[in-house]
Length: 235
Image (cartoon, rainbow, N blue to C red; front, side):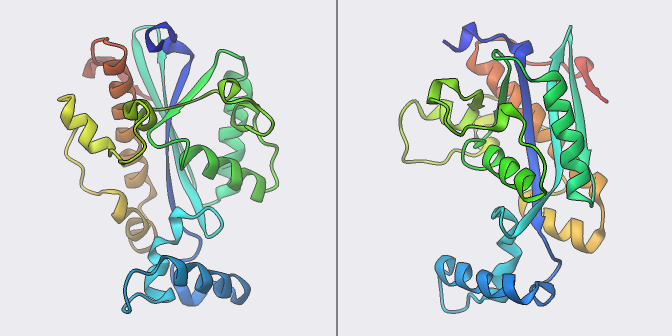
């Protein structure tokens, strides 16, 4: 089945998210009270408070925001990577949505992410709606049958029906011996780098590396050779 998918019809993507505010004290009172409720549900020990748990708020679309969307696609012999990143989430999402509506609007077009069905795709859709923007058709799953939804998920594909375990992108890349450049940050560093260092470009580079790894893993699933370094183009 996977061998029949045309790799040129796939848009590989990854998103980076952070809490909407740099600290818990800056959260507006109404949202703060709602975060307190959320925090009480996710706390794991007595030391966990709404304030110190706020650093995890970025993983929830109601309390976080998207600061970067990186995409990758095959064009002739090249794998081209581009990032949409901005402090202004609405501006970022407008540009990303316009790209989807222009270039990924046909029935055979597909989106692919790692854990995308649980995180990237719904997070994008929710933040687009929260920002009062039209939802691109390829992200709109409402009323569609499962086989009509144009989403691929490298983590779900690896499960082969086994829903017990989460398999990280790093683990899969190691299992398949996919070379990955040493990163100076990981996912847990993103909020700090954004709010304290204000280094959005550094985050975008980290996000781009994940997109490349997702594409490499999908090629492994199809039994195809990996993308060569000389064929990777950052646009």
